[in-house]
Image 1 (tube, protein in one colour):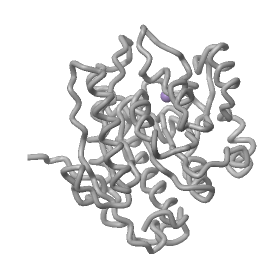
Image 2 (cartoon, protein in one colour):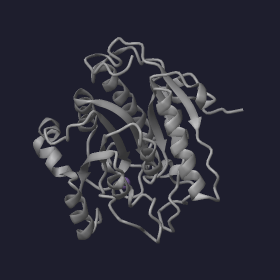
Image 3 (tube, helix red, strand yellow):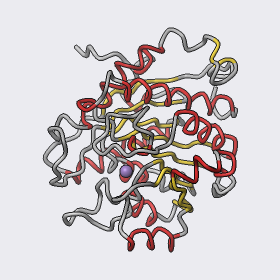
Image 4 (cartoon, protein in one colour):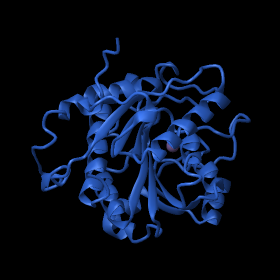
Length: 311
Ligand SMILES: [Mn+2]
């Protein structure tokens, strides 16, 4: 028996092939096969994040239609927004290649069913196989919220991990543009990776620029696109709202900046998918990271409802 609640107690969807919803929540506990030393047991790391987010999301389940001050009204703009929770993708531990293919296939199915995938990661390698599913659903612009560039060509000989997802995205012909927001601190990338991202035409926005300019001016630099895919590394957010990450870095994207960025993007084009990665429940403080991640995901769905994309 599965005792874990669904995201905001939304109806379960299984099998995936029967999906009938506007938004498909799916947990993808993917872990890049790097050997890295992190301040918590790797297995306990991000793999339990989907469960933690679902548990904390229940806080909101019974007040979704109350007056929401962050939307100055109904979170879903009075629309009938159908959210389904597709559970967690079961990944075979022994084969990274099989895992990657299974993820791409699951996202393909969700897209074919006409729903917007909202993925609970997983580490930040998760978007690589997700984005491969958009091959016939492009062109798209990828917007990354992250402290780090993630533009390494490979790490420990492995190309599909959390240090490389923006480089891999850049290589996909259907990813026509990208914007990277929240960059800061030492260790975000090497000079060569910065040059590669710049040469590729990535619109890079330092966290400090975001704070100084404000969301509206930053969004003037958002590339024109019909569809926007949003990938979130929790360490891109400020540790005050996301303390449960491997490498907390001060000066990150705050709650209203994050919310307003997505509201602004939704006004410019369809949001075609979202992933929320790198939450580490074992390092969290009073479950704040999971609680706020759940709230932000609801805001993203709200942004899509208010723009008229769903519901
Ligand atoms: Mn990242």
